[in-house]
Amino acid sequence: MIDQEKIKQAVRLLLEGIGEDVNREGLAETPDRIARMYEELYGGMYEDAQEHLKKTFHVDDNEMVIEKDITFYSTCEHHLLPFYGKAHIAYIPDGKVVGLSKLARTVEVFARRLQLQEQLTGQIADALMESLRPKGVLVMIEAEHMCMTMRGIKKPGSQTVTVVKRGAFLENKELTDQFFQMMR
Image (cartoon, rainbow, N blue to C red):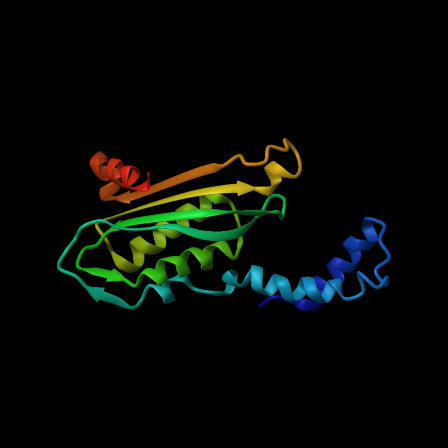
């Protein structure tokens, strides 16, 4: 679990390190606020995404299912700055589907960890493959990274796009093409 006391100490040290007075009115409660916020932001570290994917429903139809524009917020593990955007998930059921909200919950679990976008994309795809055993999965993430917009190169609005394909999406280019047509 998250150690709130260590976070509070670290925030105090950080504030002192940048030359702030940790006792001034505006900052006095900041270490406590940050510790509570980190429980929310990084709670996915202690959650099993598979839990959300356990309840499935039988289907006779094995056509593509797409859930798009799933908003997420995550934190880059390189700079500890946010990145955020939309996740799009497609899968080809093999006799069972999961509730649509469970796809969004799966994204949320993995996003609420220190992350790399490339890793996040793969983790979502792998969790779906493992839990649902579909014929194929495609996950695409489009995100803006604050490490690109507020520091370093300073290019606001730039988007990073990652795509991970598993199963039938690797084997059948037409399925991938269909996905991208449906995304327009």
